[in-house]
Length: 265
Image 1: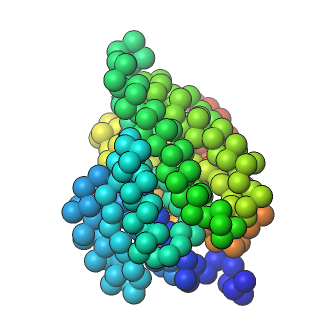
Image 2: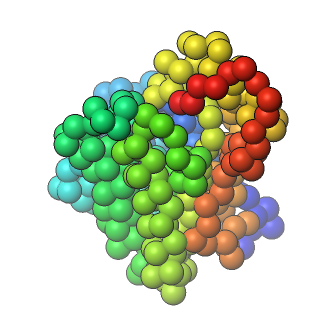
């Protein structure tokens, strides 16, 4: 074991949903810690600039196509990753989506899109990767959730259902795969400005309201997740599994403060 428990040199990490946003931030953090990457998107051409960025850091980056709603796509991605590197040490199960509508307006297809992507897709990616990890009796699986793993918010019912499912799935897989030396944890960001949430940040009244609810008084910045993802990917977290780690500035404390801003996400 490395003297530096956070050193990922020689490790191979898959990061799904790496064409933008937090997926790229997770990839950067792992690469800086020494890992080589497999980066995925439905359109791998969108990954080329990020690939070049990672290679400029002195790490390898393999862009692969992945549609987490397609079982065959999942299997092909994992086989291609394994063929290229000969092993998979880390999975950051990040690909996801959201539909923002009042519950009475959610359609059958809306529900299926969100649940198939965030929950079913995450499970089958983890399953395919675990099949490569089990023979080596080593692995770090990091399912990306959100504060909605533990909180409910109006207007995002399918998303909340999917993220709650990811939390429960994480505990089940941790129990089943621990015997093989695989840890499974859930990294749950709070309010971060991403492609999925940027429309909310255009509403200054809402930003003021949500910041008032956060004990640290600001939304998350991408770098705020770096330490947590490297920790969960590294030997520093060898005895941590089945847990949901909330990186949310403290909003999950549930504090309610006096404010005139009363609009939820």
